[in-house]
Length: 185
Image (tube, rainbow, N blue to C red; front, top):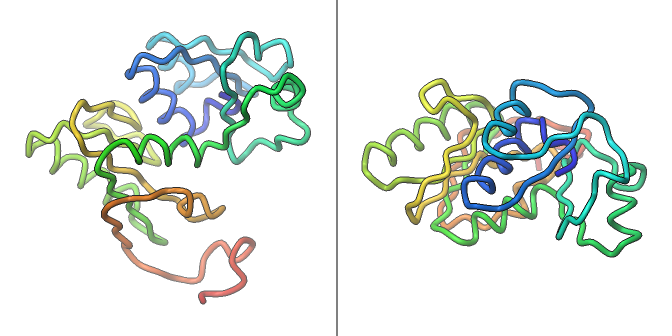
C-alpha cells in the first residue's frame, strides 16, 4: 500500500489486516499510524523504492501518490501487478456488506463516528472507516464482524463516486473543492 500512513489508507490497511490479509506499505516517513499498523502485523517501509513491491498480489495507492512517477507503482505496472486506487479497494470493502456512506462539506468525521457508535451499541458489530482518529475507537478504523460497514465518503477527488452504499447520508452541501468541481452544480 503506497502512502499507507495517510488517514484514508491507514484505515483501509487496518481493516485488511484484521481480515487476515498480509499488508505491506510505504510512506515518505513513519508516523503514529504506521507504527500502529506495524503493531498489527504490517510490514512498513520508510520511503518509496521499486524493490519494496516484493511479491505483492496487488498494489493499492493513495490519491496523494502519482502512479505515473512513483517507483512502486511503476514497478507494479512493469510486472503487471494490479494497481488499485484506494477508492476502489474501499468500494470493494463496502460492496461485501450493507454499506452506509456519509458525505458532505462539513461534519463527515463526526457523523461517521456517531453512526459507528450507535450501530456498535446496537450490537451490529460494524466495520467503520473514518477520516480521523476517533478517541473511543482508539483508531480511524474498526474491523467489525457484522454485516454493516460505515464509511466516511470523501468527495474531494471524486472518491465517493467509486462507493456503492445501500444507504447514503449527505450532511450538507456547499461550494467546496472547486479545483475538482467547477461550481456547486
